Image (cartoon, rainbow, N blue to C red; front, side, top):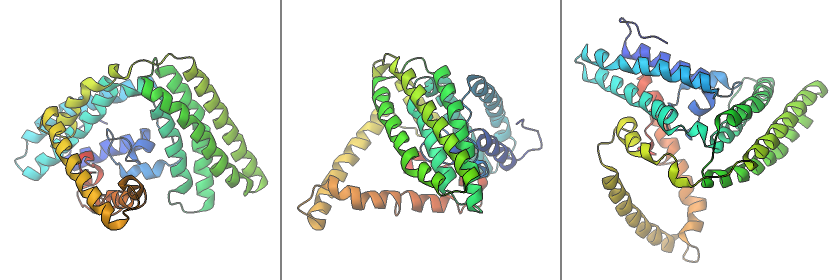
Length: 320
């Protein structure tokens, strides 16, 4: 993916999105990973899992560094404010990837990252729209078959794990096994014999790889959480989210907002159901609003209707 002098910011952006969609399709199709765009063509790759091989990550970061270096000159070639904003958005989005993979480097200490990719990816394969049941089965078998490869990459990449991630990942492994049992096994049993046998084979291989990954984690000695990731927070806020406030200012705003929201939640609780805590009501009602309207669904439905493909495929986590 090389920039040519004749390329517009739109063409460059589409090449950038398409590359990431092909090589990191699960992260690009999920809002769980702020450091990647919501690349639309990830929907073309529901049969693939992301490639977190160390050499591939290095190759990708080198390419994106080169791409990003050319953006300021491209910005200076045009005084159109809208085009300049597009270029700034691309620059910030690339910064998110580079900060995460080169400085934060969670792929070297966060087992949850790999579990999320494997099982969010499998859930997408099973439940995202498809032309037919046969297509759903095909792409699910393909993603199941790649889970062992992803966990081998995890074992090769991870050297140590912060304690919070360590404990959470062990619980998640149990949940992942249960997902295979409750969701994938019934699907396999409903298929014709040959398809059922292939699905069962891939499910068993995924379970075996989960077992191996758990043994790998059990052999590690978790480290204190304070040694991981914190030093990149301000840089992420400034360069990726394009926020000019300091961390202290952001904390103060967040604290004031939290206190105000608590007061509103208590007031709302007294009207909705005085016998329940706001936490109980949140689970059933406010969480629905957060995920639907005026939350994620509403925001994403607006973003995805934008004509500009750069702004359509870059979401801003501070607004979620």
